[in-house]
Image 1 (cartoon, helix red, strand yellow):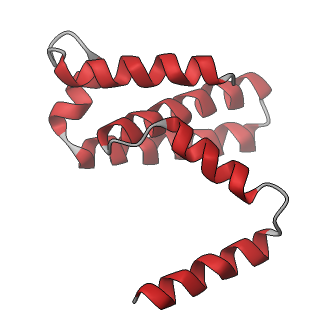
Image 2 (cartoon, one colour; image 1 turned 90 degrees about the vertical axis):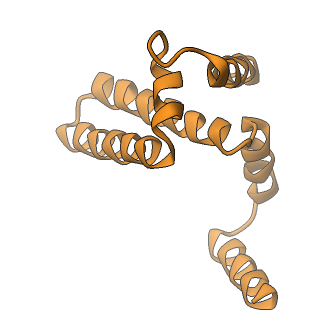
Length: 112
């Protein structure tokens, strides 16, 4: 996915915060609140899992797009731009997943 698509989606999702919930699906999700957004993410994650288990490539693509979209809605609701996630992924690039997780756990312990 190109950064242009993410930027356009982020701008659209931000604009939907001011939209009428009667005319915008995203505005309706924002209006319903965090629990509704999280429920949609859980639903889309389950559908992505089932599509993968079914082994139908097109269904995996479609359901993953839904999952990513609703995750982007959550990010916008939380005031997080997708670039922040891309920066975090770039930070992790080339790191062992085990070492990266251990460093996060160490930081969590130090902050506690």
